Structures are given as structure tokens and as C-alpha cells.
Length: 321
Image (cartoon, rainbow, N blue to C red; front, side, top):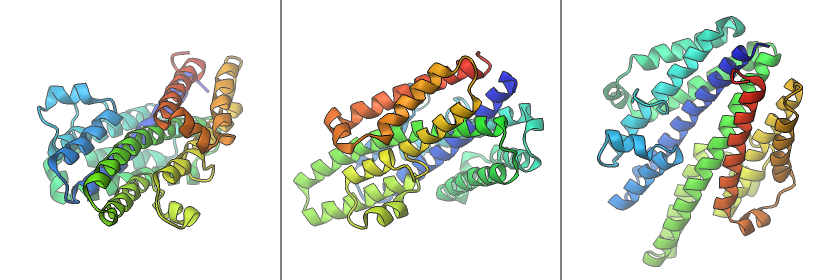
């Protein structure tokens, strides 16, 4: 496969996955903001969205204050930066258009129609229709594209590079959201326990940790696996070490290693070795060792290694090679 074609397919998948991940994150943050709380807590929740996506500086150039309305506009419809849902869907469509002949008709029509619909909507129209409904629509369109891909596309190298982009983006996002939300929720829980009764804190913990699980479609899975109270430690275990949860780090890296082995070339041995090292740390890792190192430090290291892996994949297979 030509490196330019692989590059477009890889980034088409990453941008589509990124748009869906943003919709999930913004949806759960919006739903949590509807629960009564103080102004500082709300500001911290919306600021976490910016921190998660490393957008504090670009946001500060556009808005003076961190409010729900400002962050939602910035992350949903702002076309001045590459990380809004609008910009991600535009970039996904541009990459898909460049390799239209490689995609099936169903895939192209799904991506193109998604972009055409979102390009016609202003932030006012999105709010009028319901911001939560818009987030559901974005998630449904991403699911529709995945269904079209698995249902109609030959599982050749083109298919593999689409899956590779999806899984790398998903692993990075799961690690980031777990890192930011775990520590913000854990800190909030400690503060509440000093000011409120245990019963109220327990109710808040259940709602907030449940919302985090819903952001990665893992709430029902958690209840099925653990069958009891939601605890921060088990949330981390589920999203890091489970190999049968699609958005867990273990599951994502298993897919990455499998794909890299299938598309390997004479320059990719080191990339496959590094991917295998990350995967081995998940396959044979224990939560006790991760917590001993420090969850934040472990996740920071994971995010850095996944970023390095993405760069090496670009060098070995894509346009930059």
C-alpha cells in the first residue's frame, strides 16, 4: 500500500474516533453539571475538559472565563482550532475524500453525510435541538461508520490501518480521561467526606464514578463484572487491565500489536517491539504494582509511550516515512 493512502486512512480513523471521544467526554461533563454543586466545582469540571485535551492556552485566547457555555462552544463548533468536534469531523471527511476509491460506498456516504449535516449546524441550532441529543448523534454516526467498515470492507491493509488509527486514539483517550477524572473525583470525594455525611458522599460517588464509566460505555460492564459498589480502584482496573472491554487499555494494545505484526515491513521491527513492551505491561500487570508506582505517573508514562508509538508508526508506514 502507498504510504500516502495509509496516512489518510490512519488519520481518517483517528479524527473520527477523536470526535466520538469528545462527544462522550462533553456529554458526561454536561450531565454531571446538572447536579447541584458550587461554582468552583463546575469550573473545575469544565476546566478538566480543556486540560484533558491540552487546550488551556488556545481556549484562553478565545474566552476570558471558563463556563459551560464557552467550553461547549469551543469544543463543539469552534472552527479556529483542530480539536473541536466540528474540526475533527471535517478533517475525517477530508482524509476520506483523498482515498475515496479505497473506501466502500457505504463508508464514504456515512462520513460525507455526517460532515454535511454538522457543517450546516450553528452552535445556536445545536443548543436548540438539545446538546445531549447532538452528542448522541455524533456517537451514533461513529458507530454507523464502524458498522459499515466491518460489514462491507475487505480486511486488507487498508482495513488494518483504519483499525490501527482507531485503537491508538482510543487508548490515548481512555488513559487521559481516567487520569484527569480519577484524580479530580478522588480529590472531590476526600473534600466532601470532610464536609458532608457518609450517605451523601456515597450517593455522589456513585453518580460521578458511574458517569465516568458511561463516558467509555463501561457502566453496564462494571455492574456485570463486579456486581457491587463502584470504587475508584475497580474503575481503574476495569479500564486498564481488562482484555475483553473494547475501550480498556489492554484491549486496545492487543489490537495494536496484532495489526503491527500483520503490516510489518523491514523498518518496523523496533516499533513492534515497543508496542509489545507496552502490551506485556498490561497483559501481565497488576493493579497493586500500578498503584505502588502511582496511577498518575503510570498513566503519564503510558500516554507518552503511546505518543511515541504513533510517531514511529508515521515514520515506518505513513507519509513521513
